[in-house]
Image 1 (spheres, rainbow, N blue to C red):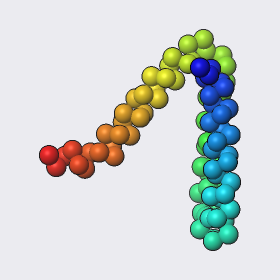
Image 2 (cartoon, helix red, strand yellow):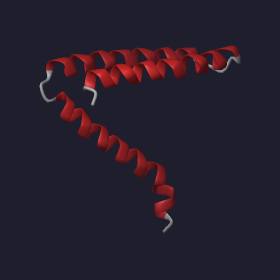
Image 3 (cartoon, rainbow, N blue to C red):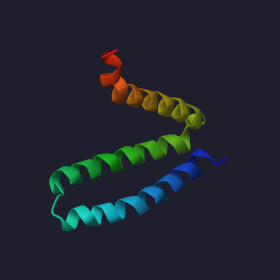
Image 4 (cartoon, helix red, strand yellow):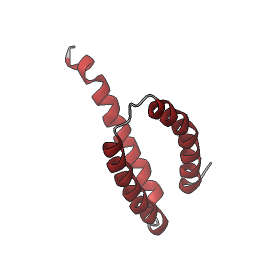
Length: 88
């Protein structure tokens, strides 16, 4: 098993490998909204900084993050399936 910190490092490396080619494709085709992307990058960076500080300083961060992730995944599944479930 990986620790929360190790898992996050692996996730970031995988994301980097996937994001760089996608960025190049969209940049060369002129389909990037640079201002919106910059604002999102700043927000993501600030959120990651606060999240990193929280994970390193809170003794029960792994447990809290695990349950938060479960809630987010369940919410996303319900949101995706809602049009199909509402029609039943």
